[in-house]
Length: 440
Image (cartoon, rainbow, N blue to C red; front, side):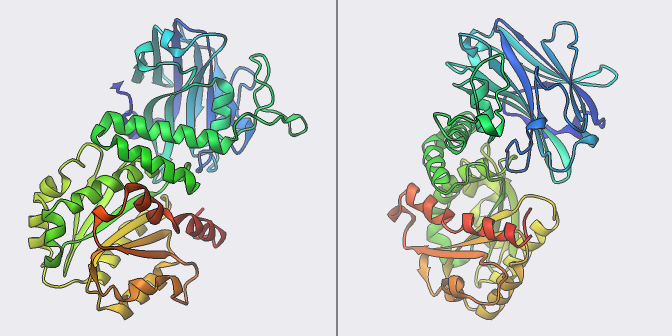
């Protein structure tokens, strides 16, 4: 199977085998190829899981640098079942050794084979895929919901191997080709940019490139979202993202004027950044709750008008005369609890007010504090938000798992301010939820 840049799919769609070989061939450039074993936060928590010319095997022997096949530059033998649970992602990279840029690459290919030498996937790159970059993440294999997935990344960095090490949270001692790029603790030398800054820049580039390819009309929003994510320290955060939309009759103007579609556009970059699959789980609710197809970069344009029959059809299905927030909350909780080992969820819940079932809502949010779900309630163009306005002072929860703010009109708030308000309380919840053992 020929993979396209940016493509993601389950490894099981290619092969049931967990003993595999990854071969990298680069023609026209001299490059060092490495495999980084990263934790769930995308960090190189254990230096022994950087496999390259100076460190040929991981401690568990789940990743081993091997003799390349004919035509390949480097080979890696993998036994995925031998990797410890702390290794959540394998990233195969290349960094130029010497002068030049990846623009000089004549042809590059990453091939995935089973242990009987059967080719199951290939990802091809050329110099036209790059500009001044000197290093690149070529291919990634990662765990999601207990299963391995594969991503044809092809993301470049202007720095070399040291920039990759910094991006993955490692510390650089000397940027010399012949030396290990990871320094012993006694010889660490401050780098020009901190790992956090490097990661922030890489996350920004990754998000903007992905949006430029899949949803170019959202590029400006992606740039603004990247700045807010960096300010909030969420560059490496992995989370599922959900959006719950009030579809009661009083919301008719918000839909017909395009405000809800605009909100979907603004939130989509967050889903693309947080979630490896780039999916925005979406529900509409009034008296009933309707699960809609997940919004993606390819379906976000015109989503409110087209998907699931469009918003008028949503309103018809959810019985728009009354609001039943408790039923919607239960539906979302059921969805995210169905995969208990998955990433935490960041849920944006939109309402125009008229909240009346305060006691039930308070009870549900209090009980839900034990689950890896953060609720960001947003009031738009309404009034009487009831208990939602008292979330920050609500007692009896193991952690503060919800926030609320209201705006009169989406056009009255800039994209930057919206992102900052949406993300304001999420980082603190992540910290407290981890301390309490709610998230890993």
